Image (tube, rainbow, N blue to C red):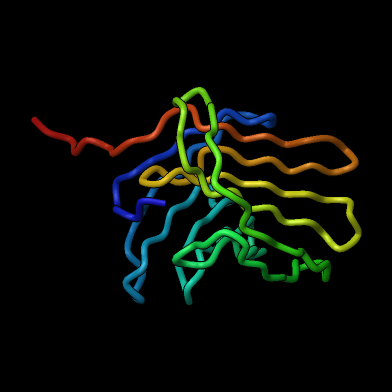
Length: 152
């Protein structure tokens, strides 16, 4: 994800619109992006891009990313997710068609949850799918850019 303050991403999701904003630099020098209500937060730390949902962290991908990399992470409820960086793909969403998107797949140890995310170079998260027995939650990028400073 581009990590400059002032960037934003707007998504159409199956549960309503979501807007992420790049807010500030952390004391470590890394940049924090989050949804205004704080539900979803993104942080670059210790060689990974980390996605927090409320207070639960999921390591998304290693930096720099490379196809075939595998790792596992544990969720707050004790489940293990088995993760893999899959070959890059072209992704079409309302914001456009993006080539060479990084594809991350995360499978929960009980096979009840599958999380897939796609990141476009220079853009960031363009698509996200979470499949559970209750259905699928889908995010697709609708718009992204840099906020213009307020002026006279």
